[in-house]
Image 1 (tube, rainbow, N blue to C red):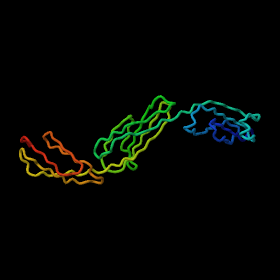
Image 2: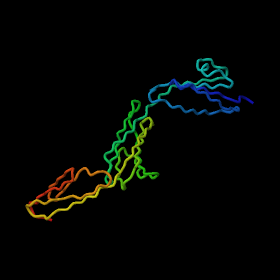
Image 3: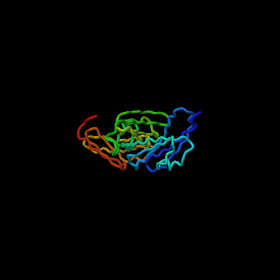
Length: 231
């Protein structure tokens, strides 16, 4: 009936534990797929050794030291493990109903020469409201709330990394003011009565419509004198 089992012994060349798999054969060729994760700190290159033997067999460590049974086969390959890029998001303050730039600040590693692709996602709950493949993009938050921002970058070796951020978008404050009687060449007092939304108001900016402006951080009344008639 032929061999019933094949034993595979893996040494991934990075000092990790030697792994052993036993697979039913039944006389047919077997494709053995094995996954192994290399630590970013290891570097490489690595010499990977695979020994396939009919069972029963010796201790795996003995096989890797050269004590190979009759009928075993050994395959040795040297591989280079590429270090993935580092995904980084750079964005300015997030404001409701304003265009918010989403900028890529990612870095490729010493084993790569460039970052070749980008994918941006902005989601709220289970809804994806932005998907962009540009390196940099712009998004306008149409409503207050919590948004998840994700950037996936891929380098020229095909290695990927992901960066995630949470953007909290607050409602806008309500801007209000009143002015007393406005007379030419006399000071007019402007008094604000603006209302905060959630976070405090930190600055008050005035544009008097004649090319003059004023600002303060306390909300106190301001005076302005108009020197020419206009509406």
